[in-house]
Length: 303
Ligand code: SF4
Ligand SMILES: [Zn+2]
Ligand SMILES: [Zn+2]
Image (tube, rainbow, N blue to C red; front, side):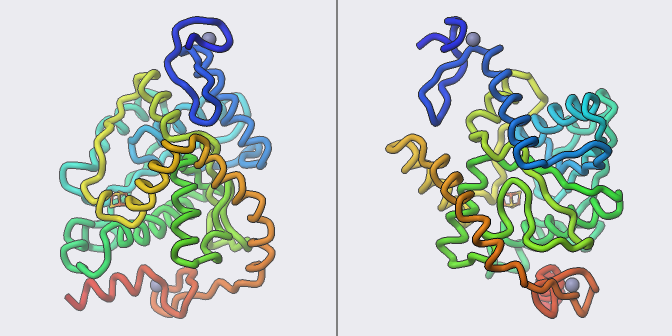
């Protein structure tokens, strides 16, 4: 099927609509969709200082490119923040460093090893009762928030796409954790707390296939290899399940995310009085008396 707009050879068929687009029409479609999300949900304002979580992967590299371009026009600043979890043979930030240098984007790199005294590979060997992604998620969330606060950033942008969000929604349903779902959406958080930097997701309405195609066609220096732990995770199980349903029923990911957005205001209302406590050990914000990071580090030090 030729490009719907100009009849040139297509590079992609969109997931939700069966519409084919050529390279130039796809770039326009992609960038317009990001802008629409940014404006509809008021994700970015003039003079914002945005820390951009950058792994060097397809999503964050595409986001870095688009927000860097947009920031010059719309008068906001971005700083790339990378986390080196310490995953042998996987995390490699050399191309990201080069890209940021060539494009004059400031980059801060933090590592689990420097911050918590242990890298993910060793932590995963010590705590075999938890899957590595759970450990990684807790430590990465903490470190990204801390990095954004240290930079005095007022937003933290992530390259989360529609596939990621539909997985998070389904994971929370399956685990019966509605309070966690109330923190999802294009801009995160239930209650405002200056100890948490709100997260924005400009790729919220773009499918992974679209972000991957964009990064590939733009020739970003991106590696498409997968983390060695990704298949061990609960998220991996949910991802495979949603992908199977999507294959048989195209539009499933859009349906999950869009129906969730209808529920989100009610969920936020339901949990608006949730109290954010202070961890008695590290004094960082926490849901319980001791935060997840301290609980995790406690388990590691006992081994
Ligand atoms: S797949 Fe899991 S372990 Fe690997 S980077 Fe992602 S969250 Fe971390
Ligand atoms: Zn076209
Ligand atoms: Zn703590």
